[in-house]
Length: 146
Image (cartoon, rainbow, N blue to C red; front, side):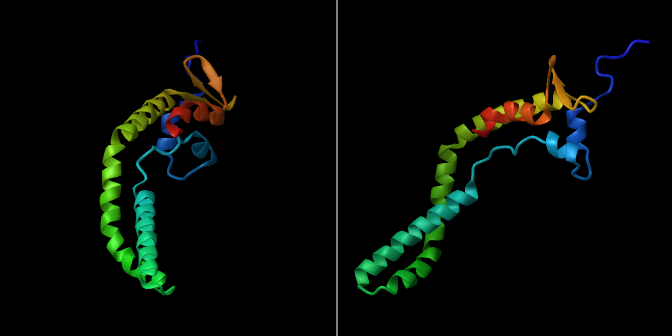
């Protein structure tokens, strides 16, 4: 009787993509999150920055300390539009970098899906190399996570 080279192994893709509940194995074999531009973080950052600047200007122009708070609350509504525009522009300027990172992630994810998991030895086997799942994924996604 001849055994196939992948006897006793399961594809990594079928483990983490078809699991209905998040098992321990699926957690160990899941790739890192796909990188994307942090729209929300940029929007909040620019909103708070513009708001703080407007509040500071209101305080300095009125010589009343409470105007910082009043100016800040007023400016937060005025800051939303410039913050959204700045975030959009920064996102468009940095789009090439994020596309490159996503391309690296996609290539790493394809390599992960092509690998096999051996439950007996608790290793991922890919192109004649065997590693622990955590080490394999950390090495595979290192460039995309940077």
